[in-house]
Image 1 (tube, one colour):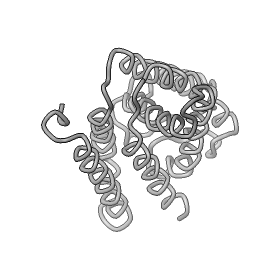
Image 2 (tube, helix red, strand yellow):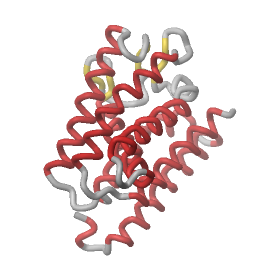
Image 3 (cartoon, helix red, strand yellow):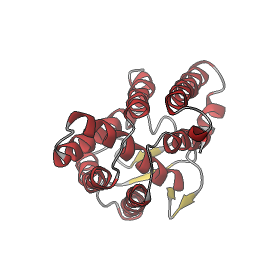
Length: 215
C-alpha cells in the first residue's frame, strides 16, 4: 500500500489534491476544450478516484471487503432490474460514456455505488458518532442528494437517460431504500472511516455536477 511508504497524512493530502485536479481539469475540458474527449475519459477518472479512496482507507479488513461487496452487488442488481424491467428507479437506459456493460449496466456503476456508499458513510458517522442507525440514514440521504445533483447532467453527458427525460420521484425513493441497507453495512462493518478524503470527494461531486446542472 502507498501509505506504507508515505506518511498517512501526506497520502491523504496528495489524494485530495489529485481529486481536485482531476475534476477541475475535467470541468474546464468539458466547458472549454474537447468535450467528447473529456467525457469519454469518465471511466478513467472514476477508476483512479476509487483507487485513491481505497488507498486512504484506515486499516481495511475482511469486513471492509464485505461492505464493498454488498454495495457493488446490490447496486448492480437494482440497476440491472431498473434498466431491463423499469423497476425501483423507473425506466431508463445507460449511454456510452461509462464503459463496459453487463446486462445494460456499466460495471463502473457498481464501483460508483461502492465509492458513494463509503464516502457518504464516513460523513454520516462524523455527524452521528454514537448512533449507527442515524449515521446510516444520514449517509443514505446524502447519497440521494448527490444523485439529485447528478440527474440533470447525466443525459447531457450521455451517462443515462430516463424514458420520461426527467428522473421520477420513484428514482429518489428507490435510491434511499437501496442506499439504506448498504449504509448499515458500511456503519457496522467498517470500523475506522476516513473523513478528510471523503468530505473533499463529496464536495467535489456537488461542485462538479452543480456547475453543469446550473447551466
